Length: 229
Length: 219
Image (cartoon, chains in turn green, orange):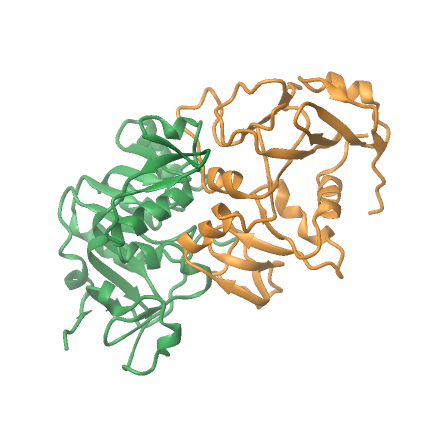
């Protein structure tokens, strides 16, 4: 059976190279794979395109990647939160470009890529600035816009536990984008607190089957993300 | 006297019905749950994948992995569930939300909602607003009646970037409650001590004031 476990952080992240597009899980603090992000920061890679719901909190998570100079583009839904001042300064100085995507559309674009589909129609954003340049369609009298898949080179995922096949379970609202992003990258890397034996996870309750998991790194502790109030 | 934020929240809470699934936007709408009568079953959806959002945790019960859309710590009610992001937005977009209560920069007389970007800004934060506004069965807005500078936020035609077109059906402000009907804006409730003339002069569209009643505050 294929061994998906990376035994060091470097081993987990050293597939990442300059210019890659990286999906990063998390909504606020919960679900952000901060330890994997620390590993990426150590690599010294440049010109990454990051896809994330938020633009990071203070100097942690996605904000840390931006702060150390890895990121040239951010695709996200909510960049202008007060705590995302690292992003704001870089954006104002022209160091990072930004693409705003509605949150449901972002989730669905990622899932669409993971599901091998060519696109989907959504009523979200019809008539707004974010529909600009997108193909409109009317079906049964309802207006939609065509959205395209968002696929990435790498997905950095946070999960709670992995078994030896890479099956994953998550933790409360730390789930969020993770089960979708894990499907939509050429290579997925999971940060888990615990590795459990096969049979430990009830098949009825596995959220991500191991087929979507390329490698996982066990932190050995449940480190909860920052950003909760 | 202008209503306080808590009083506006109480007005909205009164209108949220038994067995509804409701999404609350960040900011003022988060005040609403504590004003819902204890015996009424209203369930809250949080866009980050929580169906059955409960009140903030007691000291010692905090879980930093359980937050609301506004990043505040929450609990999960008995019988609640966690879902991934596509399922969360399936709930929002697929018509399962009986009501969404959102903040706004502007609401137009035709129900256009503007709440994600100000005209002078290069960019805005959209979050889940466009999806939720497009998919909820009812969109209620909770906001101050005017901007800090005193400009009307309820106007005849929108001048701000659109979030969703024609979706708002009710507006709750510190001056009163307005129903957005097909052809007109109806002032249904008015804050005690405020006159309909004052509300009209703070509003940039014609208000039908024939059926207005004073809001009763029993806080």
